[in-house]
Length: 417
Ligand SMILES: O=P(O)(O)O[C@H]1[C@H](O)[C@@H](OP(=O)(O)O)[C@H](OP(=O)(O)O)[C@@H](OP(=O)(O)O)[C@H]1O
Figure (cartoon, protein in one colour):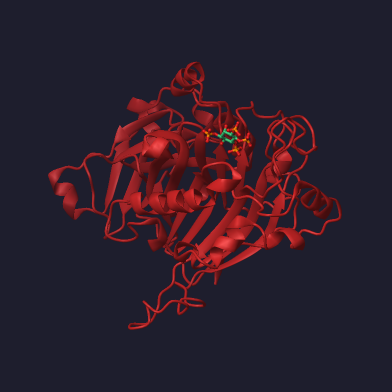
């Protein structure tokens, strides 16, 4: 079995600017460097009109700060999707890029009866070494009394998010789904004093059974198969901004675990048993998921929510690790005429006239950071040839060629080959 480590973070950032240092949130100070992917789901990223215009022209501040911190460690932004304040960022170690395929994103608005994106979900799906993964970041409706609405919105997000392609069209068709966000579930019945005293005394178990999401797991079919680690950290909502003190405003919101990370493995039930409720447990697609940490980060005070993170190890039963395209750069490039590369295509690779080859600086942050590109042109007689040569100097704009990265071939906008 091959292992693959995924670090998931969710944070309702309450329209705040990123703090100066997010090292501890990313675990870069304590990590073993074995994280293969970072999945960062934010909610309430400042989406005021003037801010959105600026962000459309440039990158938003949160994406920027995450790229700045992660790129020195070899992580590249694979894809991102934003719907108003809901932002999903997917980073991976650059050397995994050839094995991340079929990258697609989806957004679903559920605010104002489905017309407004202040609430809803954004997702990204891809196959990772041949295993289909989907990451869904949601911001569900607020307030104690809206538990049913939250479930309805979640179902409607699942129904509406359909990806292209024959395999894994819906979120739940994926081998592993990570569902996270400001799911906004609250703690029923118990009054403020009881909740606060349970928190003060680290007696979280008294609160678990009144947590609306835990309660919904018993009755909502759509939650079947979703798993969550024990909530051993204090509720992450609602704090006075700039402090670790629960809400002292006139609203007097009761503390709650609004910010959650769950996962679900696809069930592959034997023929004839698929419809039987309860027959799905223990039946998976072969990928094993182990959760290592599920924690909050109390040190961040810029928002009225605290971030929550979790580290998972995925054990793949096999790896599809033959690149569809192999690039060969034989010598150092000392002059323009040297700037050639060969590439070899796997026999099952179906070519497109949109294929291109990009040139990147070492330490690039984003797959759009290429300093130049050439079309991987397809001549008629190329159909028979698996190995071809291209001259890339025509597109290289940077004189600083000493620090250029080996070429990464690209396919349209959705697949990195
Ligand atoms: O009106 P929509 O767009 O649904 O947004 C809501 C309101 O702003 C809520 O404020 P109010 O209570 O004044 O209506 C707020 O709850 P708080 O009162 O807890 O700040 C929610 O914050 P989150 O719970 O962080 O989602 C936020 O999602």
